[in-house]
Length: 502
Image 1 (tube, rainbow, N blue to C red):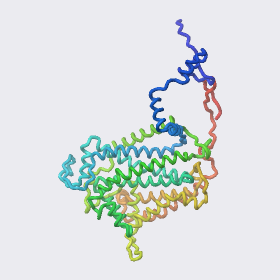
Image 2: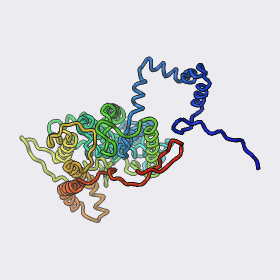
Image 3: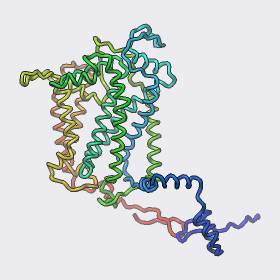
Image 4: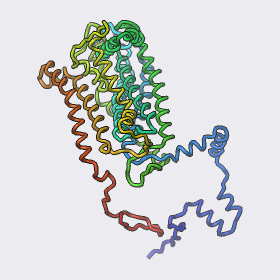
């Protein structure tokens, strides 16, 4: 029988954990009484990277800020990743949008299309539309970048809305976070504006129809409408000026405002600390979760790459906004069916189903577009933006809150939020009444009356049902508060594992 070399038992600390090489060397030097070796091992010469970091810290004082950031605690709940997901979508939008600006020409000047798409060869189109076709058919990866950019915009607005809904239904907007709620809601408005201006740039028939509708809504504002429309569109629609103006809004002004608002939003989160659910050891004076480094940083990094992979998959496999199929914008032609991106579909739906009502106030005729296109959206957005102050006035609750409510803890808030979401859902479906008419084999007029009924009745029904469900849910244990029993593995001082009751 062959005898192998006898293995020395590993050197361990008092808790049974094996020591690494520097720790073993330090223990051996202490055992020998070698003071010089102990000093060298305990305080080794700094590396070149450490010297650079020290030099930079002496001149900027960033070490304490970086240390605080790395030790920032993030609550361990999936819903808190929605904000990060929105941030990652914004980063992807900036990256893909930068690529697109290298090839896009924001001009309504006429040119003759001579590209590879045969059905449009010899057609008179705008330079903007021609550049989009060139980008789609002739630039390597151009169509992929366009579609990734568009899909990311669609996902981005959806994630921002989900994030706002999470904050609303859990009461995370309460004192002292009212300002951050206003900034977050502003980000939602900026996201919709950013999406609409980008959607309008290709100058195809579908986007031109959407721009015409937006112009009609703006010009319907009494007294100020013509001036605002002239500022935004450069005169009476259609104009050659609105494409360059929308391009500046889309690639310069709105992204700059967006970046500043994101920085302020995240900065306030760091200053005020995260809210958290009432689970386990969570209290109003602590945050239970994982540090930013390394745990949260690796989770966030993985989420970023998953997000990029998902939108790349959508952009590569699922067609969106085929502008060559719509054709160039012609003022005398309206595309049908004509549905905008979903995040402004509710506005289109409100315009489609609202009765042709034109009141006369002080001798001024109010256009029928004004109420569904300006008043109703303005009222709903004002209610949502001002909800922290409305709820504080109703409840009289002025105390600071650092723990989140479960949605059923505030039945009235949950009912109002659900009713608003139901209203937007009905209006969004109404924006596709022509498509639904063909799919369901129903006349458009009949569907319009159905949506008129639903837009009033459904939010009320949804609100009452949600209120009743929340009231019935109260008094039951919260998620995570029930002891599920079982056993857990616990490491013992000898370095092994043993079972323990939970």
